[in-house]
Length: 93
Image 1 (cartoon, rainbow, N blue to C red):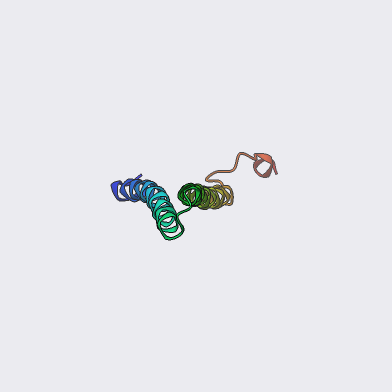
Image 2: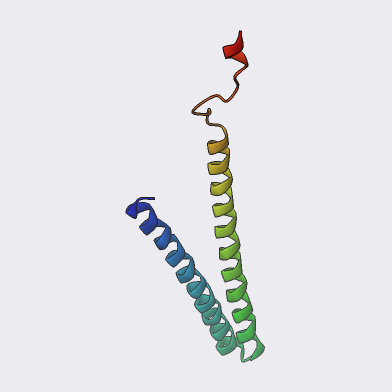
């Protein structure tokens, strides 16, 4: 595996971590905004739940994308022609 590909995979993992944090922060921000606008304290926790839910959704989407890529790679590897043929029946004729 090349250094560039390893670096790209590392950046994808970092991107997932950052998107999780950003989702929770945005959810908390929305919760604080709703709490300040309405004065209802539990709206803050609703924002936290929304943020955590968005973070879980980001992880799920990344999992599905990685799974699809791995399935495509496995299919590509299985569709290759063998480098040699172990069948000796043709040589006997």
